[in-house]
Amino acid sequence: MNTKYAAMMICAAMLLAACGKDDAEQSSASMAEKAEEATDTMAESAENAMDNAKDMASNAADAVGEAADDAMEAAKDVAGDMADAAGDVADSAGEMASDAMDAAKDAAGDAMDAAKDVVDGAGEAATAAGAAAAGAMADAGGSEAAADDGDPCTIVMKVGDSIAYETNSLSVPSSCDNVTVTVTHTGTLPKAAMGHNWVLVPADAVAEIGTAAMSLSAEQNYLPEDDRIVAATELVGAGESSSVTFALSDLQDGVEYNYVCTFLGHWSAMRGTFTVSG
Ligand code: CO
Image 1 (tube, rainbow, N blue to C red):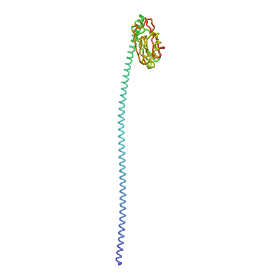
Image 2: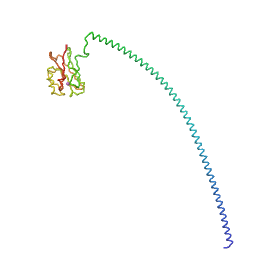
Image 3: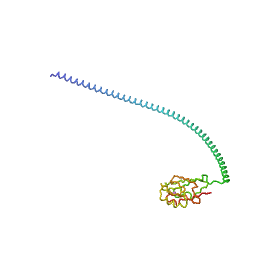
Image 4: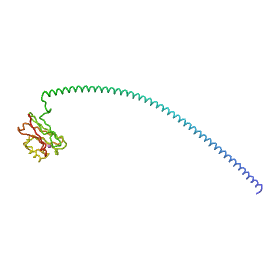
């Protein structure tokens, strides 16, 4: 190659290098500008964001403040209403208390009146009772008082869980055509354990009839067949009663009569005398 061409090539290369240097410098400057712009943009964005945030916060604060004010006013209104309502309730209560007091006074007055009436009534009743008692005493003094207010020809004999009658002697007036005797068991034991009956027999037949009964059972009423028996109830246990009616004309003159329980072994202890008076 010749020198001239070579020089041109070198020159071209140098130019290229120079041009490339310029391009590089220009490019670098451009990048810096862009970076600066980007930085500015970012800063602006950040600023805007900050402003926005401030605005939002301010708005939120305002909103909260307003809401608080509203709530406060609402609370005031509610409190006011409640106070009014409480006042109304208090007034009502006062009125009710007053009414109740009046009602109580009225009731007390009525009760007092009623009590006076009762006292007056009692006084009248007492006076009447006194008069009646005086009359009864006068009647009693004027004539012979009957010992029993019931029928003297009707006898109720109570028995219980012991081997005993409530009385060991009975007497009926001779004016009775018929005599009815009822034996009532007021105890708790069944008749198989503590049965009782009321059997009227001549006194001199008690031991024999009582002994004969000991070979019998509760189902047989512990009652032997014997023509000397004048009258006999059924055997009764707890809560049971039995009655027998007989004519006084069945009794023989001059014979002493006994009543006896013919339950197993009771005859020796459970017996009494039966007499006709007058
Ligand atoms: Co008995």
